[in-house]
Length: 572
Image (tube, rainbow, N blue to C red; front, top):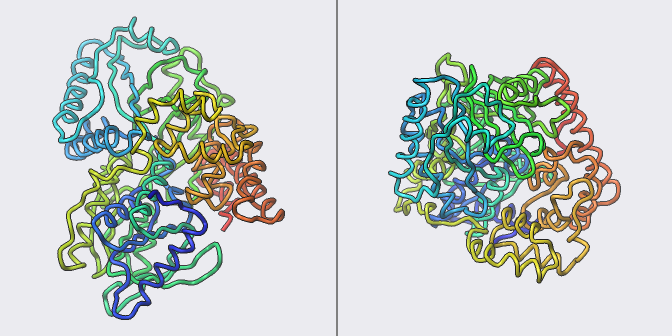
């Protein structure tokens, strides 16, 4: 059975979490995870697949923080190889192969990159040696690496692959392969997988304090932000996987805690695919970080920056200075410069970096750390999107010491995410699916790349309600069926959830989803039972959010950008 993250299952999950702790003679759940980003979702899946009773609480929406605002790469990290962080790179490359070939082949796909060479002589053997080591680490892992090896290219070969790159500024390039994923969709899929195996999962639930017996943490106090209901959820171990909010959660337990997490802001731009003619992505070193130009469907994602951020963590904001910097870096590569009016979407995210030294954030490693500052509480922080499964495993291993008895070892390297089973078969049957459903084959390919083997659930929905086969006006990459499915199966509660995370309309359209907002809200209202006034509030909030983001992107400093962005707070 594949669990649906519906409004009904959310309510049932909250009731079940409270009921377990109220049962005489029990200590509550085995593990309660706080934080519904990729690490929290991975921890919940790891724990429940070991046979433990598990709850997951997320204050906002699944993946609403860092986990929906990354470069969307599943990669080892060439940058960390140059920093001599071989352990992190080797671990990440193994996870890349596992996700690509076994756990999530429907979500994770190969992507080629060009590494332009600008110096004669030393640079080609230097970069080539690094990429040879990168490939060797991937092939030496215990999982199939699933990607071609790197190759050397002349300037003429580069011009054939990427006609819009300035070949006068380079002497050639190397091409290598990594992988990419829709990060928010990955998180939702992991949560659904955990729920399918028995985890109780609920978003829009804020942890307000910890339950204690002496020094020991025995659960949390929380508030359902949708209803205002106050809850107590008891658990033998609480795992804090709150990312950049780790320090705030540590303060709830009565002190600064064992970890110091620094937030580093990274911004990305989205531009139309036809603005850069290239069959390959591009990676280039900059003075402080790396520049990625990443193919993303009918778009390119360009990033990233790497600067400290100590303002509002819920809504990091991109300034005009950030945007101009990225455009300037990208334009060093391009024959036809990108202009501000070419930018369809902008998003900013925060990386949770472990600190303790006065290093610039671009030099801090992405290694993760697990600590147990007080009995009954495990804190995990650091890491990166690619290694979420390892982080979840390590957090549950740490929790197992407090659980006593025999806790089985992690098996998540063999637990495929929902949608993986049946994906290859249905992909081979795409022509028949198109004929039977009446959808264009390109639509079937789109659905397969988002839902994998669960594509039949979308096709069934279209068969029941043929009007849902129509694309959304103003965002025609997406069908009406995907909006309804986001509410009935993927935990979406608000308009922002659908336009920003279940789809990526907010960054893939020049109007940031404004034109599609009302129709999307109308489709959601049918399922969630919204009155007309509530529907209007949802649309109004979304429009105000878009305008606040646009205002922030006209400012010159982080502080001005933050002041503009926080004028449109969360809807709950």
